[in-house]
Amino acid sequence: MEIAQKVGASVLDGISYVGSLTTLSVRAAYFTFIAPFQGRPGRIQRSISQAMEAGVRALPILSLITFFIGLILALQAAYELRRFGAMGFVASAVALSMTRELGPLITAVIVIGRSGSAFAAEIGTMKVTEEIDALETMAIDPVGFLVAPKFVAMIIMVPCLTIWANFMGILGGALFGVLKADFTFQRYITASLEALFLRDVFTGLIKSFMFGITITAVGCQEGFNTGGGAEQVGRSTTKAVVVSIFLVILVDLIFTMLFFVLAD
Amino acid sequence: MAERTKIPVATDEFTGPMISIRDLRVSYSGGREILHGISFDVQRGETLVILGGSGSGKSTLLRTLVGLERPTSGEVWIRGKNFVAISDAERDEIRTHLGMSFQGGALFGSMTVGENVALPLVEHTKLEPSTVEIMVRLKLDQVGLSGFEDFLPSQLSGGMKKRAAVARALAMDPEILFFDEPSAGLDPIIAAGIDQLILELKKAFHMTIIVVTHELASAYLIADRMVLINKGDLIAMGTVQEMQNSKHPKVRQFLDRVPEPAVAQELDYLQMLTEPASKQGEGRQGKSR
Image (cartoon, rainbow over all chains, first blue to last red; front, side, top):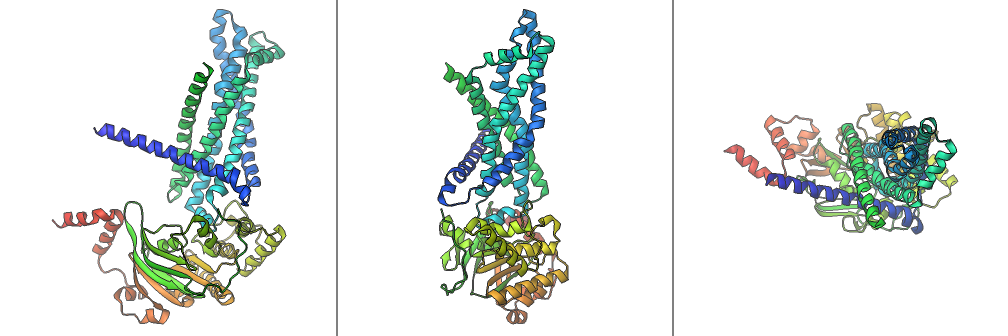
């Protein structure tokens, strides 16, 4: 009985947590899309600086990691394919796994590590130093001021980063293709493009858009949940990373299932 | 949602008490009641000092007055409007007439001092950037920080941070100014400077000022009236003279800085802090058995 109670309580906690993330996202969407038309200041400058931080500055590390992932995928695919003398399929295997799955996912994981954690730490520290309270006493909504610019930055930058990650992954695969699978660079890229349908890229981008929302909501929510003291900021940051990774995988699963059903 | 508001100008249209609280009760989640029914009025232009020891509930009282905590019951009237019952938009409108200086300053670390002071103006008014710049310079000048516009808060000393925070609180020309522990963590000379600043603001702008502190010397200097909060109850209220002449044992103990007589009381208090209200009775009964 006790186990059933605990499981039940955890499920309820989980549902209420997702509820709070949804509320935060909806409020951020309000401050992004509706409030500027009601005479409230839009915060384009803040969104741009967030986009620079979360997007542009992530490019070097993202490029390196996804290039390696592409190379690893090619190696792993070739391991099996060469037994069947089908090395020509390496290009399509890499292109499909990158665009449909690994491009969005690896991008999300890197963005969680760089930005999701930073959101939690920034808002958590502001909570501890009473800066969030100060915003409220100045009649400035913390969600509009802090969360909305991050949302705008993330829903634009995460899909952009994903496109770049797909490209770098294919490039990584191409390195193997050219060196070990008798492709020319030109032919490898053509083979990759031929294997891809627009749908593959598009489903990956829809997922990455959802990942962007999830990562921002969790990072900011954990920041706002921070109690008193510096130690709590560390805890929020860790929790933001762990919960974000879990929820990103969950969102990934849900959308992959959805696309699977819709494709029938 | 509220339209962008114009800069409020101190007007004399409202003549009643600027702040009026009635039977205010505040509890934290878990049921522990922090304030047990507090009532008082603050008139326009008056400086009220809220005194109390650590954990007395004086900071909670201040947070409730500016709307950061929601009371479980009772009323908070600010400028003739019930702060608890009104809509968020109306509360935000009233908040543009209030200024609050937090204990640690609460300046935004990623913005310069100038941007910090400009923030309320940028958010709530449609003033030209050049006008905002002039107003920022004026406010910083008022608190003796002219020339520090481009400094980051991390480059300022503790006393300067507090002054910058006061400048930000003054940005919208508030009618009521709240201070949370203005001299905490400052050396006596800097603390005296902050007291002086409060007196100047009162004299120059006829502001209503609420100060939470446990520094007696500072309280005697700036207060028109004082209230003493002890464990969530309002023990005494009066002018500096009246408080100094008070025979109330708790007032005497606080003003004469007498330590608590028995450790038992501390343990009792600790128990009150750690147990939810509903369980307190049971806990005590259990012990006495």
